[in-house]
Length: 239
Image (cartoon, rainbow, N blue to C red; front, side, top):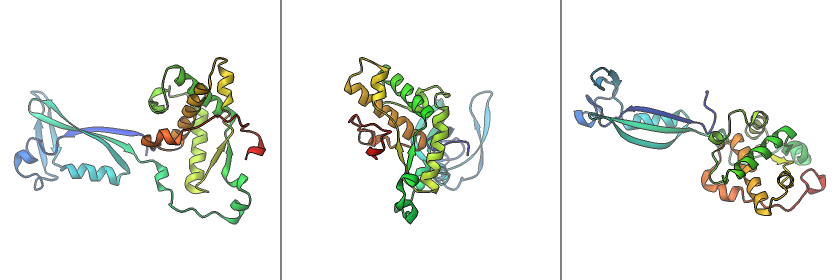
């Protein structure tokens, strides 16, 4: 699949219920299923469409691994009604089992099994992106990481996120990321106050999590409710 988890797919089709030649207007909504119907869009454009029910489209979307985000009915011409469907590719992390069982080796050496240090180049991308969003007045509840930043903003983060996702799906099912130093935001701006540091930290956490998998937008406020306790992230005593 070319569409990554969390990616959106939007398509438009003749409305199943109001397609000329089939649907409710022909009084054969179910009987006309899969019948080829000719539709005149305007004086110059004519299309051939296979009659489908609304359930045909929703079932196809769900079985293909999509979540239905939005359905919109629009009048495309005075005589034609269309259905716009917005889908989201289900996050791969939804496949995680409800119960995880770790090996004795993993339990004996958790540092090797679960802890992953965030690479320096990844942290630099996160610090810069989070500070940029904060300066633009964008909060973690408003940020759309996929659409807000330039496509080349996270070269290192994208590669790192793939390895973390693989660990979650195919190895331990648990990863503890370490090394994001919240005090760096203070160092980047001498006038930074505690609220700014916390806001930037929330943005950084959201950006990295959204690259690893799909983040439940309804829970953002709780998932990223961080507080700066001035702990050295690289100090082994704080493990």
